[in-house]
Image (cartoon, rainbow, N blue to C red; front, side, top):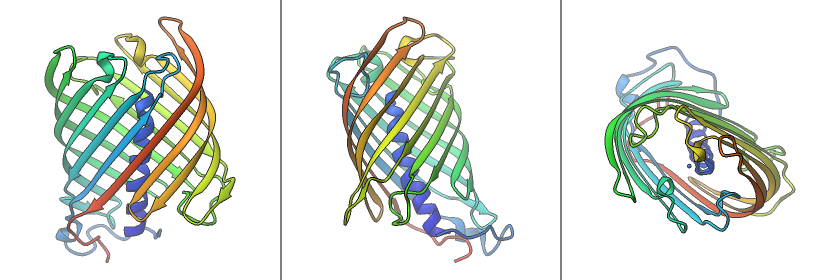
Length: 278
């Protein structure tokens, strides 16, 4: 279960990297197996994404980084269900100066997680404070649901069709008060070549974004195909790649396609704790 948890943790971070376009397994054991203190841990994660990720925002290079430290204070059913308070900070900027891409968001919250064989579903709430480059500042309570599911990770030698999907919905921005934002993504790759530490794979992907207030940058679909190299190393994962993407924005009617180049890096850790059932 510890191996499964680490794998989900790393791959979930990698899946979150793709939101910048908008932004060992064993069966469960009986509930309360062992002491509740066995579930206490301090898992954390950080990731960085760099690239010209929007064909409509032509030649706009985007940078985003995120860091989070959480604490598992409660776990049941052999840690398939956990409660995790956390603190986090996300910063982003771009070379074109769009306000929605130039911001800092920090927060403290709590979420409930249900782990499955191939993914995780979470529901949470947080107090967040967002600052944008045009001197917009706002704090408030956010509520959200999110999931991630993945299959045949590149870290496994037998994998041939690595892929993942994720979804997030909620009032994700305190500056855009009252705006409900929904995002969904799916990616499917085919292993072309496995080297010593690197997997080369062509892939296809699609991302859909929608909100209730009609902001142009949050109502769009981006889809395309490309080639990337995945480099897993223990708790670290690096991606370098290029793709041809097509972007359509629903309200303005803008549409564009173009070549994107990107690099993603993710790292996760656990500072304390024994897994339930160990």
